[in-house]
Image 1 (cartoon, one colour):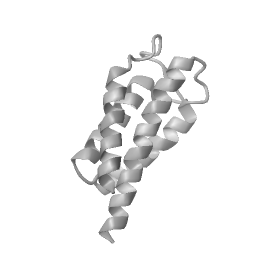
Image 2 (cartoon, rainbow, N blue to C red):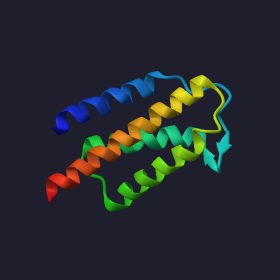
Image 3 (cartoon, rainbow, N blue to C red):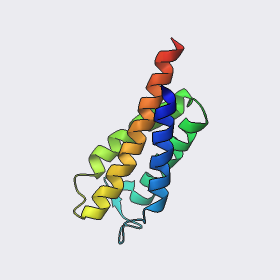
Image 4 (cartoon, helix red, strand yellow):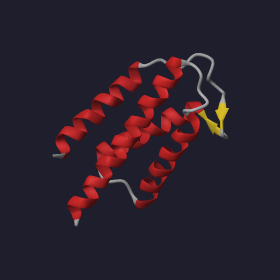
Length: 107
């Protein structure tokens, strides 16, 4: 069952790397969150999930990241930037789903 999720997450990571960073957003913060780091963090958590279960601390960080996306996405007024960050959010959400499935399987 996790095999399909791993494949989907790998695909999303490849798509994220193929997307160019939204023009004009380098060095921009929204709600005190650096937009460059937001995409990098989502990618980093996804890579960690593919390598194995996250530590409790990293799982907490992933959940906090999901909340950050909900603050950052609404103020974006550029369609490409919105698509870029929605994709990064979806990648983080799939990472969290995989972690949840792992936790359920371990019980």
